[in-house]
Figure 1: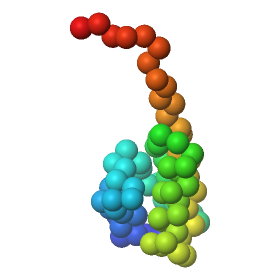
Figure 2 (figure 1 turned 30 degrees about the vertical axis):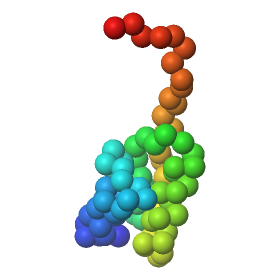
Figure 3 (figure 1 turned 120 degrees about the horizontal axis):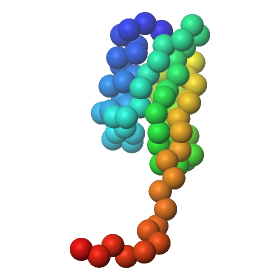
Figure 4 (figure 1 turned 180 degrees about the horizontal axis):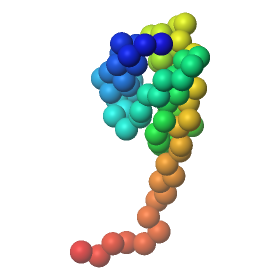
Length: 79
């Protein structure tokens, strides 16, 4: 992987309508790349991996994405 591939992956993460994630960073490592950031669910992480495999079939990708837990508010906010 080189800086051009890194840029292409970052562009795909931000611009592909199936992903549209701007908070994910691409980190180059010796054997490929690592995705770092947070997404809303494990399904979202799997979707991102699938889109990247489709676009870059020979690229080794590891997802170190955290899952943001968002729950339903327990009380009403009064304004």
